[in-house]
Amino acid sequence: MTSSYRQPGVVLTDRRFTVPLDHARPDGETIELYAREAVASDRAGQDLPWLLYLQGGPGFGANRFVGRQAWLDRALKDYRVLLLDQRGTGSSTPANRQTLPLRGGPAEQAAYLTHFRADSIVRDCEAVRPLVTGGAPWTVLGQSFGGFCAVSYLSLAPEGLSTAVITGGLPSLDAHADDVYRAAYPRMERKVAAHYARYPQDVERARRIADHLLTHDVVLPGGHRLTVEGFQSLGLMLGMSDGSHRLHFLLEDAFVRTPGGPELSDAFQEQVRGLLSYAAHPLYALVHESIYGQDARPTAWAAERVRAEFPQFDAAKAVAGDAPVLFTGETVHPWTFDTDPALRPLRETAELLAARTDWQPLYDPARLAANEVPVAAAVYHDDMYVDAGHSLRTARAVRGLRTWVTDEYEHDGLRTGAPRVLDRLLALTRDEA
Image (cartoon, rainbow, N blue to C red; front, top):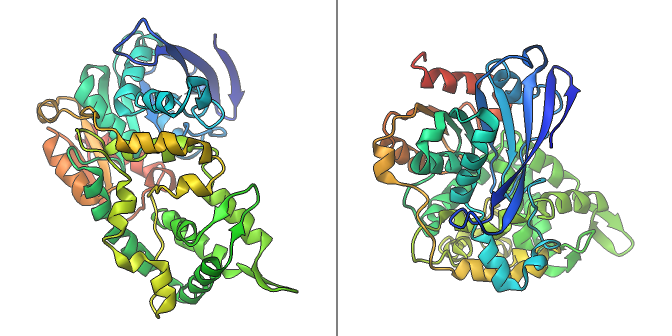
């Protein structure tokens, strides 16, 4: 069943599909997928090619645009657009602390979540494509993790694609999670150094907050326990175009005077709760490291283990000495499942996923080396979330892939650079750059 409605300049249609939970067992259990179709109002009756948008994450539903915002405006000039909520996200059979107990205990939940990686997402796309396009191939636009999915698409079902466009999402084809984080922590340190160079007053502000958290038990509204490691993880913002500025504004009014002495303000705590909570996207925490699993090696809390190799991120030592407190980002740790109420019931499930040793390959190097689908990718020069060196090695391994390497944008360039970023990449796929 579909329903259509209008927003300024666009006609939207809600679409729902039923797909197998395990595509290797097409007659087994099914789940529901939700997607929103968008077409320009003045072209609603035309036969247009399709563009499938795959969101970053993992664990985030597709954008909820109002009208023709951001890159969507550019896409609607040429395409009908399908904004897919990837399985487990948004309105697509959500997977969270409320729904996962329907599966049974932690073992059953972990087994269920093994079907929520890029390979299953690609097979979902291929299952719904004939229903949407009548069987014609479509263009895929993959942002961040959506780009990981696009590379899996080129590996598993390139016949379904007419074009692939990737922004900030060319993954390493063979790096273990350990390799990913060994490359990530130095990038995080560079982003923090750039932030402190821009806002030197934040060095002392961050040290003061860290010192407070090391000596006080702080519980945020809703029961989220704020630790110094959790505070450091606010550095996730530093990978976005305006993230340094937003972090600065957050830090500048962290404390208020009370009869009992300085305390973290309610306003600060409420903002931090919103930034740290996984309630709206628990899959990000649950399956984040598994997106790098491709062999018999467990991911085994790679971000936590590798962090120990970078002692400069130890906030207690920084506060005890005269070093700046370093922020982190794009990392999930065992303590994340202890401090966040939305994740606490899923701690054992996460442990089982971290210990898993039977991950299947997500990419096919031989097929990518023989690729015939036009592909273009934006690689952001010092992307905090996806290592540019890894991305460029992958670019060289995919036949015909054209890159646009730029330091003009951060990881959210598709949003902040619209429509230029999408224009540039589409031109590259057409050899018109």
